Image (tube, rainbow, N blue to C red; front, side, top):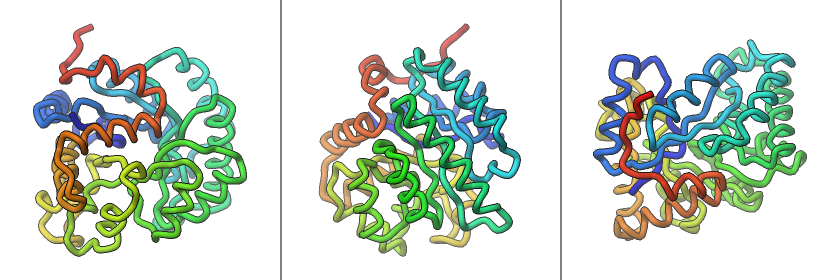
Length: 280
């Protein structure tokens, strides 16, 4: 019924119970999970998980928080891996890529170079992008315009209405997750309620950005709880309440929007069924 368009199921937080987490998501009606890579060292991990769990697909990219260790060889490795993955129906795009101007100590110029190089790969292979936009919405959008990439998702969107409209004008969708569930998150909730429904996709960013019901405090303790892909069903419930939409039409809209953002999902979505572990 639901799709989580951004989940790091390969993260160490799931090492003890990864299969159980995937099964719980299936039980909650989450039939699709997009697994973005963060660096060349986890390319095979997300690919392998997509093969192990029938509801999972994957993207390949280098996260801005991993940018310090990434150079030209990593860009070349990414391009080679993308070329080799084009025939894989579970491969859906380039990500997680972007810019992060929140974490101190990251080289902005190097981040921007790495981001631009990955956008060039997305453009070359005509693939959508999964974008990290933390305190960098304008700069991320500027590179999209410059390099002509026009499809994908601005993940964990937390910008202004004007910034939202600029991403939409570029053909992207906006990802909403756990932050949406906090009553104090007035700006995010206003955007989710007032933007065109076709602008929105759902996500968890698990194991991060846990929703309100898993947190000790509305914001301060938010990230201490482990988030899981099953929680996208709760995020959907909150979105439905904000917009006055029943679950079934909302689920249909979220799948439609997700496929518009990540077109390679279209071929795969037709065979998505309640997820189970695939034996080798």
